[in-house]
Length: 159
Image (tube, rainbow, N blue to C red; front, top):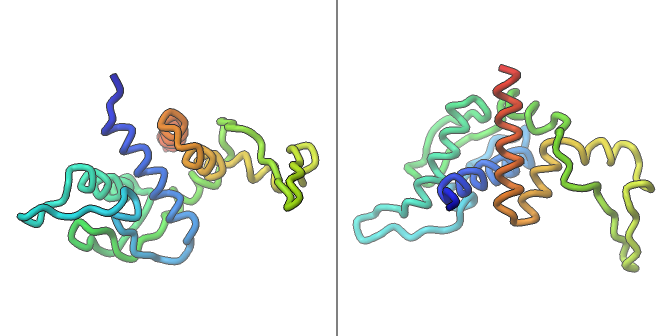
């Protein structure tokens, strides 16, 4: 039986990393609903366990030194968030994972395989952020988990 909360954690980490990498070096407001989807608080004003778990995942990334932020906005998100040097280097580092080479699809439907791509694009496709994008795009919990575990364990080994 799968630990769904761990699968959700990996997805939350992956989506958070993608948001922060795509906005780097700008500081942004990282909303919890951008990570896990919208949530309507109950009649007591309490969010769902899923929403609170996503919020906790982004706070955890800060506690582990992957991102920095100025303040929490209740449980709605984090204010003035950006990747730290540790986070940026982790995402832009070369990955040992390979979820496939990039393909370029032209407007006429013709597809070029990786043998016709420039070396700079091939090199970029081997980074952790590129592998993470492929995993999230696939929607596969297995691929997302594998990618996030790989990145976190690589960062742990470097420390």
